[in-house]
Image 1 (cartoon, rainbow, N blue to C red):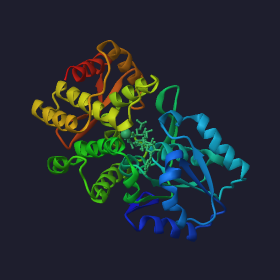
Image 2 (spheres, rainbow, N blue to C red):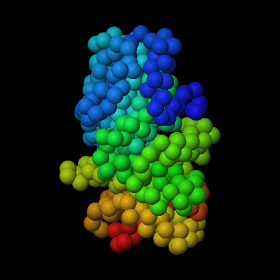
Image 3 (spheres, rainbow, N blue to C red):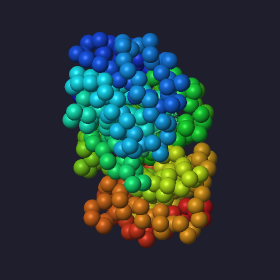
Image 4 (cartoon, rainbow, N blue to C red):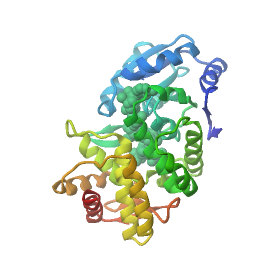
Length: 348
Ligand SMILES: NC(=O)c1ccc[n+]([C@@H]2O[C@H](COP(=O)([O-])OP(=O)(O)OC[C@H]3O[C@@H](n4cnc5c(N)ncnc54)[C@H](O)[C@@H]3O)[C@@H](O)[C@H]2O)c1
Ligand SMILES: O=C(O)C(=O)C[C@@H](O)[C@H](O)[C@H](O)COP(=O)(O)O
Ligand SMILES: [Zn+2]
């Protein structure tokens, strides 16, 4: 599969494919960015495929997806005199692929990087499409650049050590791809839930859906915004809870809640039927627990949507569904409507 100028390899041939790419290109040094978990669970799988390299370890978790962590990565690249022929291999979930990608894309104005995603979320979504970045002042992905990796190497065997909660978090982005672009998959595959034995096909389909959209609009000037379905409210919830010790939720959990809120908004705008909303809700609640917040918090959560990257000025532009499998972007919604959607979710 080709993604703009980068290769996407999926399956058991992915890691040998990465080894081959590193052999063929002019590479001065290789740096492998891992977090504390992927150092333990995933690096031993990747290591035999790599020539001499330097390991850069960052702490695990969304709270470390910050500029401060980037500084530690840039420092290690600098200390080792990485030049413009160096390659960064990001081995991890979406935090490592977003942050490692951003560090590479900005170091000396940009060196090559490849993504080796190890969570379902990163395999179906974060590693593909060239969005890189970090959170800033509590806002999701506030600082970042679009930069395509030189390659994405997806081996589903990494999922064997992932716990069920993380698997479900990634599944939320799979469901998002179904809801925006693949009604037949929603109709048939949802019956399996996360009891999937072999994720390869789901990963292939999800990546293909995302690639098609990204290729049509790599810099998100229009169509790509459909990939943000569930994220206007989802990111607001995630940002709000991220700053509250003990209440952090995973990205996919926030997106699942956001997809219910934004499906409800779609009904209010006359785009989606009540029956379709009911099917979406019933399915999502069969997989995800309800995100806990109190009604008093809804206005504060909704306020955070004012920082959404799809907004123009003070207008919040949401991606909504105009049927299962069909999405429309740039739908203006008010702050009051966002807050009401959260109250709707809370009442369910
Ligand atoms: N760039 C994009 O297009 C894009 C798309 C979707 C999400 N994201 C971002 O991705 C991030 C979420 O990614 P995530 O869900 O992968 O989170 P993550 O990177 O925090 O990984 C989740 C947890 O699993 C651990 N882990 C990773 N691989 C493992 C493995 N194989 N076995 C055991 N443990 C493993 C990690 O150390 C971490 O503790 C968010 O910051 C989100 O904003 C980016
Ligand atoms: O690739 C995209 O485009 C997406 O919107 C995919 C999202 O799942 C992902 O969470 C992305 O990081 C959100 O981007 P942002 O621009 O809203 O920060
Ligand atoms: Zn997402």
